[in-house]
Length: 50
Image (tube, rainbow, N blue to C red; front, side, top):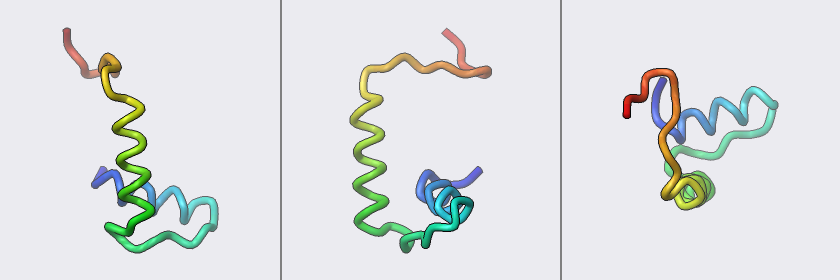
């Protein structure tokens, strides 16, 4: 699967946008935003256990 920033780069290339460099300010800010927005949410997925 890879890192979250690698997933961001792959997503950008799939929509034919120019991906930023790894560890760029843009990707770090996006990673921070996503972690902030998901803070306190329950984990949910096919392999998650309670």
